[in-house]
Image 1 (cartoon, chains in turn cyan, red):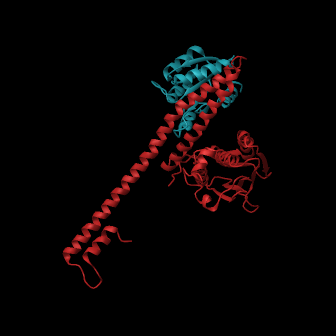
Image 2: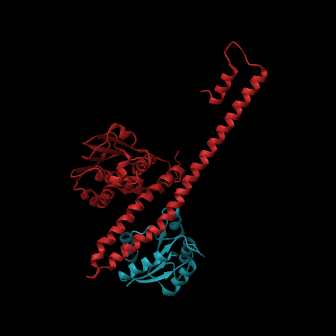
Image 3: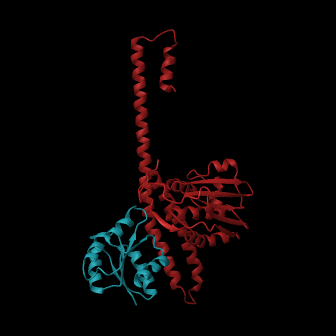
Length: 121
Length: 294
């Protein structure tokens, strides 16, 4: 089953994503900031990353840029989780190298569909 | 118009056209006029600052409200998935209620956020080419449970000439959903009809989307207040039918931003028809531009 890395600093959202993805059979890993996200991506070699954009230490845009610049992680598709309230977030995430974006609050069936497209191109 | 302060001054001087004021009196008058002007400027600036602060506050608050709300929705969805075991199955309807109420709250918060963004001129348009029939299908899928809730049935008349459109897809979706959910809300055991066609054979660069119902309808007086934010046709409507009362104000603004318009026709007791006109191609220069709103 596919390995998913969730980079999200909100603990409740972490738990919800972890439980719901695990429930569907995905092997799920969690990271709480951009720095940890990059580290986990290198260690666990996930098939897809769900990346929140406003993260502590290293934000999602910068983490994405670094992941997409590194030879061992650049192939991993990234879906940006962006906040609805702040305009320009989705353009910024695509410019940083994200493969797609999903606007919060998460619409789970829609997110799963987006994930499936990137996991089975 | 003469400023009230000046009027008062003129009266106190007992001015008429035959007696001119002395230089001293002139000086007085001038001073008062200047003072009144300064005061008025000051009041205007204060009001503008307060209005801007209000909009910024609403934007920030809406965002802060959404985060915990996303958790409530997420957890209730998660629990519904996990309560499939027979001895837990009875919890599902209750969890659905929690989720439904939270979704309703989210809609209202989103409306407030949209409106405050319109007011501060922070509404972005994301133009793209998309299939209108496909969008309509998707919107109807979302709106159908709402329409059927009051035992209404839906009719769709889709002209074969309707194809792709260059507009902001999310905004068109929101406008259509708003009109359909309004029709569903104010109609019982009736028909909701969605028509999508070119405006006229001559005006085929404009698309016409009409949502009509045979619901409760509105009076002329009610129609006039329809597009004002925070106004539902009367205050008991909100209690009976729910909603933020912002949907139409937002839909109209979105429509105007994309170079279109919304019109309404209604007869009390017989039904209402909202018609949206949208340019088939972008009417604004360039893509993804921030359109300042007044």
